[in-house]
Length: 91
Image (cartoon, rainbow, N blue to C red):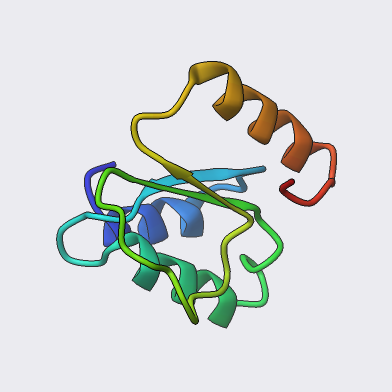
């Protein structure tokens, strides 16, 4: 998906175990997506991993389970996904 609005439409159609999202997206960015997920009781339990190449502080942003700055190591991404799917918090 190319933007947060499309992600929300897709989330309304099917159940997902985990969401990977870039912070920088058109129409609804990853931070807006995180807020929308937190505002929806049916979606707030789905772990959200935010990723971005723009290293800006995410102070005060909630609703995501993990943050990965780009570039990131694929093994780290896979470990983070596995940990969150097992119900463990991000390290």
